[in-house]
Image 1 (cartoon, one colour):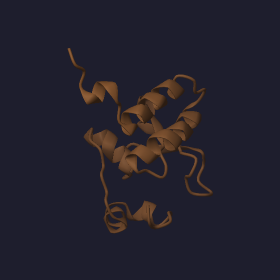
Image 2 (cartoon, one colour):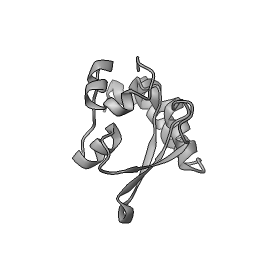
Image 3 (cartoon, one colour):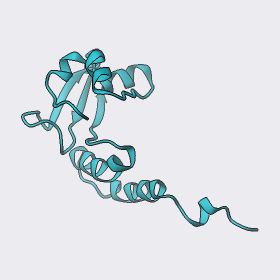
Length: 121
């Protein structure tokens, strides 16, 4: 039986996701995981920075491990209330991704965050 091209020649994205899976098994912290995600998955997804978060259910908080290119002056680990309007908390509350395509769209939806970051993501 002949194999499909996808089975014999993985795409760059599949190769990078495989690489990420291998590397993720060797990380020692969520901070290191966000660094690896930014380095490996970021280019595949077109993202400049990737944060990793963990829900702290009893406190209704999100422990966010900022990626390596987070804004200067931002704590490497932040606690965010799950009711706070951020792309990550919105994605968790709605159980769906938040896709923003322009700086204007981001600014309109998240004006507080937009005031703290550099334009042009």
